[in-house]
Length: 149
View 1 (tube, rainbow, N blue to C red):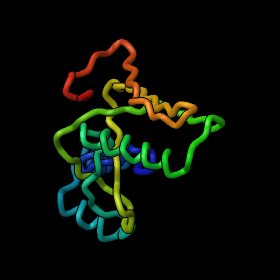
View 2 (cartoon, rainbow, N blue to C red):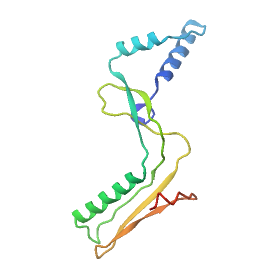
View 3 (cartoon, rainbow, N blue to C red):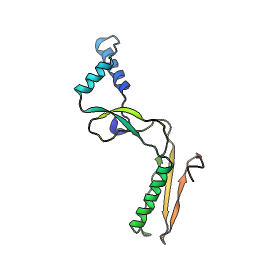
View 4 (cartoon, rainbow, N blue to C red):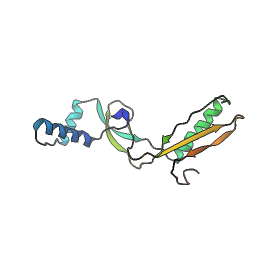
């Protein structure tokens, strides 16, 4: 689940164990916080991490385009160069989420399941080397004017 961007939280592990116990014993039983601690000790491959958000703010977008322009100039792009930009989701979230992750992984990340906010970004370098400002394509959506400043 972690590699697909849907890591589980502590509560989900406990809820699943409660469901397994209910099937195994035939009656609902609840595991305790101590069970979860022992579970983590018996399974050293997992650990508790703070998941990183897959969202971008205005500064992130500006940094991305500056790096893109620098790379375009650095590689001396010509007319024959074709770039394909795909759409990506930009959504802000104000808080981090603690999840269960595989020990040793440098980071854990998650995707939000709510309706996606798609923003297509197109960057153009003309045949004479002039760089054109990026175009934002919002399908049926509007955005705050401060994002485009």
